[in-house]
Image 1 (spheres, one colour):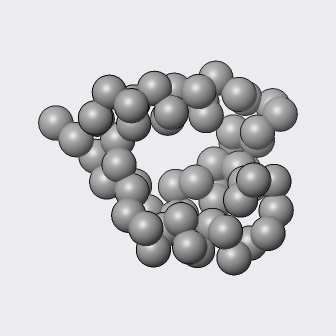
Image 2: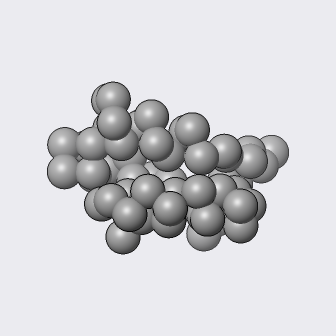
Length: 58
């Protein structure tokens, strides 16, 4: 089964419980699951994250 993630998943994770420096394992897991074809997002989500111009957009 594959999961489609919206921008809120990424933004809330960064801002609340899974900060990029605090919990890098979460972000590594997202990358691995995406590469394995189990977690996806859409281009509009990337656009929304890029508009934030913060550490998440990098």
